[in-house]
Image (cartoon, rainbow, N blue to C red; front, top):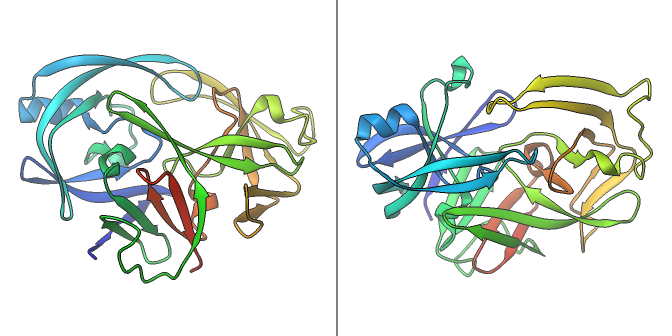
Length: 271
């Protein structure tokens, strides 16, 4: 079982080594990106031709149309994908510490294998199945839902809120703290007018203007079905989004996590 190192940029952005048509380049790894994407400049450098477009939506609900190209070969460790359809992404708004990033690898790249993230040791493992000799023990398995839209794959799992309600959250390793739909603020005992709630306005990398409310959510949030995979009194970003919420790096980093898309399972191991 090959171990591939990754590095964290800033607080949570995962950088990985990838080969595209034999070229060794820096990518990001993000289960929430949808389709695998290449930067506009890198597509031009490779001389790739447009093969179509796809429509999609950001978590904010903003509709986007993405140009698609076909890449002869992308390699990550021993995993090789040929004639892969990917999107073109504008990286001009990326900060300086991401200026060398050529693309973002999506979870769809691993739809026929199992991806395991060992956060504490900064290692990624790719195996054919969960039946291989995993060195982490048995782990705890949870249902994982994969939603397909052309080359785009989105992962969801069910989460129990402190209120007791069970909702469906996207699993997004590209985000940091929990992001929760602002419609749930009242149910969770939080008001935008509370003194300890911070209001932030800004513009995302697509030019979309947003307002976010940052607060501490009292109580425990848990993956449905087991009280061990939890986070107590987490910091939360509330925003108007199309999902109930997203779990990201801040929740996942306490564990070793495997994503078995074909088997519709997400497995948490103790570190």
